[in-house]
Amino acid sequence: MDPSAKRSRRGLLIVLSSPSGAGKTTISRMLLGADRQVSMSISATTRPMRPGEADNVDYNFVDDARFDAMIEAGEFVEWATVFGSRYGTPKAPVKQALKEGRDILFDIDWQGARQLEPDFGEHLVTIFLLPPSMTELERRLRARGTDSDTVIADRMHRAADEISHWAEYEYVMVNDDMDACLDRVRSIVAAERSKRTSQPGLVGFVRDLIGPQH
Ligand SMILES: Nc1ncnc2c1ncn2[C@@H]1O[C@H](COP(=O)(O)OP(=O)(O)OP(=O)(O)O)[C@@H](O)[C@H]1O
Ligand SMILES: Nc1nc2c(ncn2[C@@H]2O[C@H](COP(=O)(O)O)[C@@H](O)[C@H]2O)c(=O)[nH]1
Image 1: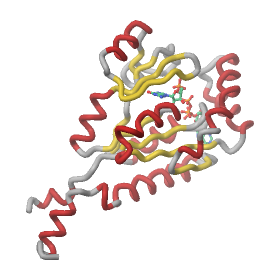
Image 2 (image 1 turned 90 degrees about the vertical axis):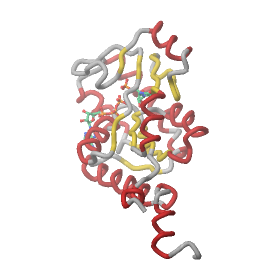
Image 3 (image 1 turned 180 degrees about the vertical axis):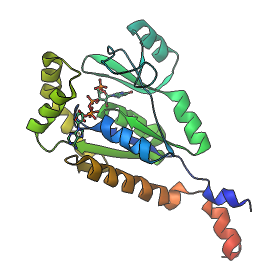
Image 4 (image 1 turned 135 degrees about the vertical axis):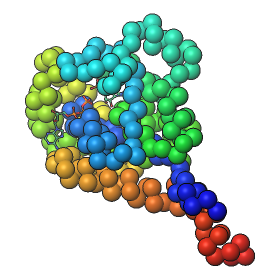
């Protein structure tokens, strides 16, 4: 048997959701820095670019006409309207990653997580981050310094509704400490990779190990 075959595995689609400002982007960046096996899904969005963001790095920033065309062409595995703008996950990188047995991280909302379930359920790992308190959530949105008072008020207004979907997720944690939160996310990813169902290559390896008669 090719020794690398035992390492071949099923790629994970790791979904991180939370109310706006609870820390998804922060934890995602930390995970990407710590785990080279994970790459980020870059969504398309019609929302305006924030200061400090870059096109095709944070998002693929598109106008409404282009977003419509992408829907029409079937380019998304899921899309949703969030805070009045549209966001969608491109299909091609997801298909490619799964073909190659690589993991992808998604910073998407509960609507997106729901849409991925029917087609990709066996690959999905869903994680919801809760803020320590609503006061702290608002403090983080303000401290980020990227959104106007109106945008922050709108996001706070919708936070309770976002949080109400927490029980649709497999894993839930309070992001009160970034490092502790990252550790927990990494533990989840490690455990998911160790699942027998995530390692189809082990079937042949074990057959070689103990013989086909067992
Ligand atoms: N555990 C934490 N303790 C203190 N501050 C935090 C923590 N996690 C994240 N932050 C800070 O909170 C702010 C919001 O975090 P971040 O942008 O990651 O949130 P988000 O969930 O991705 O929001 P959005 O959905 O709007 O993109 C940032 O300034 C970040 O540095
Ligand atoms: N269903 C999807 N939700 C997405 C996607 N990309 C981002 N998001 C979610 O939108 C809000 C707002 O994000 P922000 O960057 O404007 O603060 C947040 O909850 C993201 O998780 C997507 O492709 N699909």
